[in-house]
Length: 215
Image 1: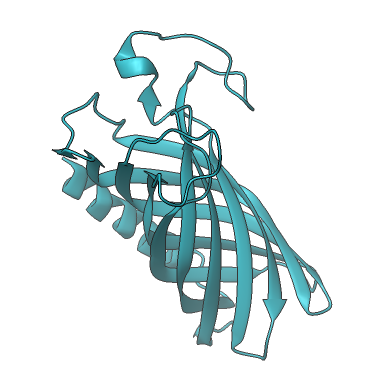
Image 2 (image 1 turned 60 degrees about the horizontal axis):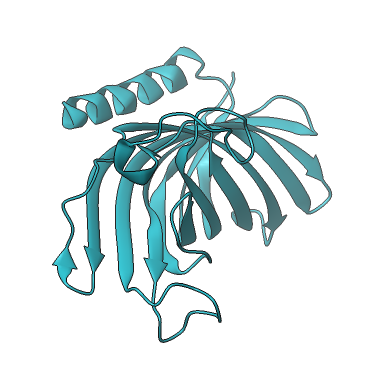
């Protein structure tokens, strides 16, 4: 079922580009992701991962652009007692969550800098939890995630730019405490309490020539 959903998402994105095929631009992007899961017993962006994908964008006017992407993104959480700060749990723990994501956002340009704000829909394609004893068979994670994102970009040259993004789940990725508790205010959004992805990414974007050019 997850594979079918991923294929449908890709088809929708390609179809969206074709239906609006005027003055679109496209490129590839990739970089590092540093993650934690809010609502567990650990703190710190200690889980490294990567994001890799492609994007298409349309320039609306000189200051505004709309962009969507298809990304494979690694998220999760990690606690290592050998490097943890004072007062952090001494347990070894690692959660690895891999998503196919579709971010959609608006971008505002200001000289060589630009600023992003939007949302992202993700489908969980792989999950694994481990502690000092091995793999954990715990309460399952949700198959889908909605997240908000904001970012800042710097234009290096006409084809290449760098970005830093912050993303936080809008919908929970798992009920708290093995599913025993179903309601308590979300730390930011005020929804049902649970566990939420919280990550920062640093990426490079390479733009091709125009994907479609207006006549």
